[in-house]
Length: 150
Image (tube, rainbow, N blue to C red; front, top):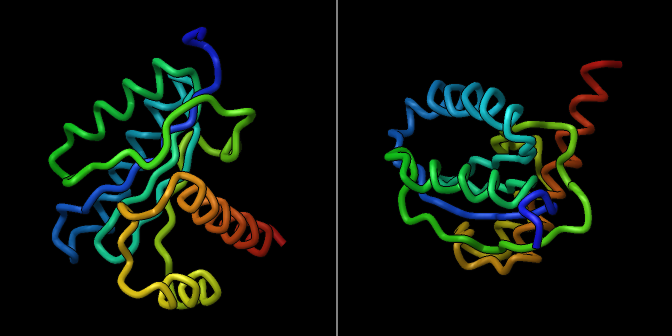
């Protein structure tokens, strides 16, 4: 397989940043991700919820693996687990070199679905489940962007 072939990696990790410091830390992660991922042709979405990160990375295989290697070595992430890794037919998050989203009470449908399953334990998600979750979050993010622009 060519190292330029489109690759998708989804992982979950525990956020090791104290709760009150998460906003500035996530902003720092987002700034660095946009800069680094733009140069590497990596796109994706980062979900921050209930003490967890769930992130999709997509792009050339070597760039995605290098990016994940940097993330898994970052002390802000603990208990990193790959939920899906492999070839992708197309980009699901092409609009963003990285988009970060925290779920809030305004994301009722997603939160209700997560609550029905009990505690949020993303490391137990299958690859398809994780992709569906992040795709739903992308839809919320797209709607929020359209409302802000309108």
